[in-house]
Length: 141
Figure (cartoon, rainbow, N blue to C red):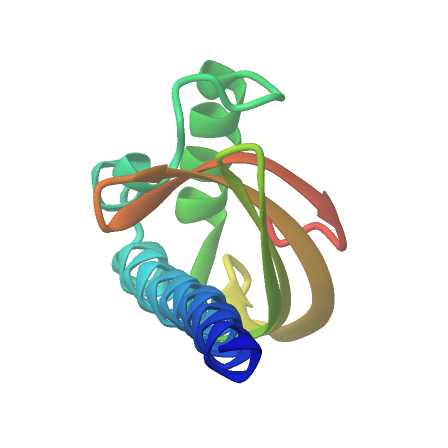
């Protein structure tokens, strides 16, 4: 009798752990897909292609972000951008993703440039995608 209860408890514990791992994997894959969409929008070079990735509650101010990004689009042509999602944590309904990135662009004088860094993205889930609320670490844009 006790063995049956212990077996049932063990089964429930393993099922719960498997669900948590699946959720983490799912968030990791969805964050990577979302960042791939952001990359495509940034390479297109227009605000209309990237605005859906940012929350109107963006911490630095949505209007300021738009102005800065539009200025970048005028002065730089993004030639390559790679995102590597290192880790993803969920807390209080938000997702925190540590992302390593490599960026290459050509400035308005025609000079090729490169940068790399690690940023922390605070994301708000919205359906199967995310909206960026905050970015810290190395500045991507």
